[in-house]
Image (cartoon, rainbow, N blue to C red; front, side, top):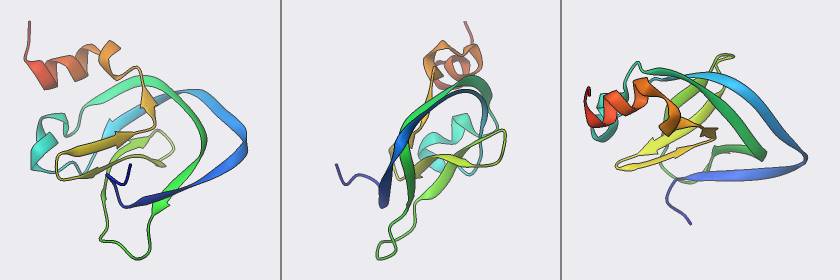
Length: 98
């Protein structure tokens, strides 16, 4: 879609695993998620990296191994983490405590 300055190299094997992730480095538009940790899962068929000819996107989410699995540029947030909206911590950060 061209919403983030990333390129993805597809790999033959699909990755599917549980993951613990933490929002780190999110900018103003998503600042309510800063420091929020949650458990979810990664499912992907490749890896995304910064496009060398475009301004950098901020790494917004890392898994427990420290690998970047989420990026932000302005109001766009792209994640390899699923199960985000099943997390009480994420829901509280986004929508308030209830």
